[in-house]
Image (cartoon, rainbow, N blue to C red):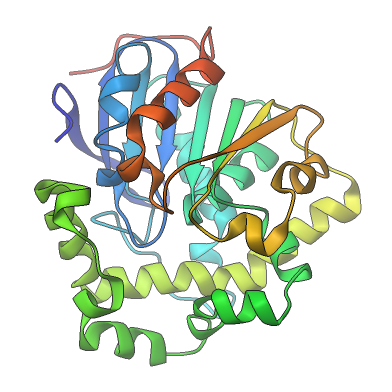
Length: 295
């Protein structure tokens, strides 16, 4: 995986992240979703690295990155805390401003990074997501039935016990779709109790502190300062549950566009060529200053 990329462990103020870095050109930060690691980008990142400097971390709490300490408000797993990691990580590589892509749970961190640090994010791509506050405000029986895991994962201890009883049965995954190496990386993550707890904590933060941050921004009239591209999987249920995805995001951004891709939920694995082409087109042109990447 990731031919030509370096694998590093970057020590930040609040977390230590496992990171892949490769390519040259304007900087792009790619954030994975649940229950994946940065390995989900292994088919997309090398294509983008022909034009961009591509940075792919395991989010804190996920994969082989450090796990935050537990607190009653789950603030260590909040998207605001993870946003601080993103900005500090990119500054570690010499980038004060960068393009940002987030998929699934990573889309919430990407959104929060662009909201909290508008000077750092030049362009934003959201994959398979709408803001947490919108998803919960629109919650009905269909949403609760289809996305029941949001509410189950918010419970104490029970989710970890259920998942770890048989992680492979719980999460599935196919090596012929993901690739053997990416599948092995994924399996290491879902069989690690600390990582399972970290991933579940991300959901606990979502229903509480993350929603509160979104609602505070909405009440204050804050919106994204950068152009936004929204892509979603035609064979997943985001559009079925929420209707016009672009219209929802117009409540948060003045410059927004989007469309679906003909694939299932894990689009970086199922439609990497189409996704890479859409990302390259959106980010084409300078998105930051390119330094010499340290060896």
